Length: 324
Image (tube, rainbow, N blue to C red):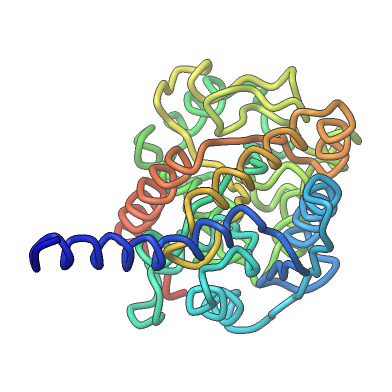
């Protein structure tokens, strides 16, 4: 064997020895406990769905998944921990829509939702429900638009906060429909709801789970959902697209992501297990009880969703005053 042949052989052996452990590691995964970070407080609406998902994943994978609530800085603290974790499949995170929204409000995060995470799978969507006060003579979205245009500046859009996603969805619709609503930013959902029930505010874009009890009690009128498809939670309520605004879509969601650079084999394994878990009848029923729709996606589909959500939310946030 000449010198060139020996060099090539040594290079091949070196590459094989380098690639071997990674492949073996992916094949043996998970061989010990997996940590799942939820960057929100225990017991919150953004906590119950992740726990249900990780519980099902633990069963499917045959390995314990320990859920860890890392609260702080509006969810960015726990998110930063995951962004800098080892990409070995033993640290995961349940991301919510706020994960894609923070770049619209903060310049220096230390991480980017698109570049610094591995997308794994979408698990749930929470449609935003458009509701009106029963004090208004409105039963549908066309009714609302017509009434608003006949009474410019006389309707209040109730918002639980200046930088909330539900507020931004309402602002987006105002622009698309060309409506003159007065946005009232309350300090939380409770006072916003109180004024809606009292008829002091008139329109609200809200997560279904937050307003469903009032809707069922007839205290608020549901007129549309902001998702492309109707929600199984309120199947009789039409979408905005069905009501004359095709292409309008704005919903909150939750998805499993991991640190950047995770092995593709592990990502595909996780995605397959999540899809299987979400497809069961008991999962569908459990998610409906939370006021959410079970959903799945491929890693690539989730990657595209994250990129489009970051751009969409940043655009609408830049068009309104989110400082008050």
